[in-house]
Length: 244
Ligand SMILES: *Cc1c(COP(=O)(O)O)cnc(C)c1O
Image (tube, rainbow, N blue to C red; front, side):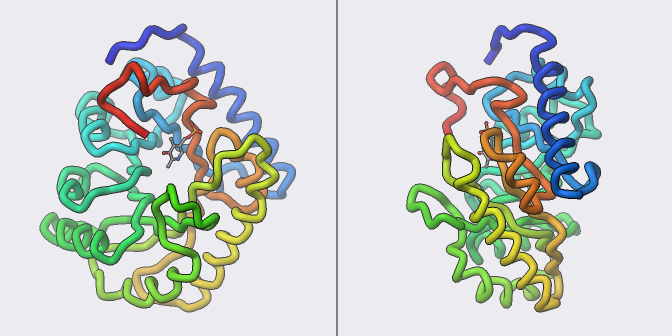
């Protein structure tokens, strides 16, 4: 999976992204340290991740279990790997001790599996609930109206800590069209936090990607997931290992 790229490109892109994050924080009166940049490295080679690492990035997002575990083995151990893609239950065991945060929990059956695997290894798994805010039928995630019922069942999973919510907003040219989606996710997280349920904390709002992370920050994102803006376009045709 060797890709030729211009050395220095990732570093340059990161400067631009960092500046835009800082500006969005200033505009919305937020502190820069309250927003974590997740560099989404799916389909990208280890050499590019190393460049981002040397530029100071320590949190990377992957959407495939096999790719995450392979990169985990090849890269420095102080990297925090986040699983941001749809997770099959039979693969939970491979990442339970490698992913610092699973962004994509959307079923009780997946919660059961994560809880069981976490218990086996005597750890507490950190997860986000993925919410399909725009109700797109091409996307995974809980429907917004299902979330409240779902969280009432969370306390039974004693080896899971729900840290917040995640959404993948519609792919759009104009980021303003997603503003209302981000603000609705934030409102939902406040409503959940108000219920004070065991094992549920609502400190994390994972929302915003390359096209719309600035708007997401203005609406309260604490984690933004940026791939293309850092590593350039992904070429799925050339890479059989990874699919969207
Ligand atoms: C690929 C991906 C991203 C990054 O998308 P870009 O538009 O390249 O920034 C963010 N979140 C998830 C869940 C993804 O799968």
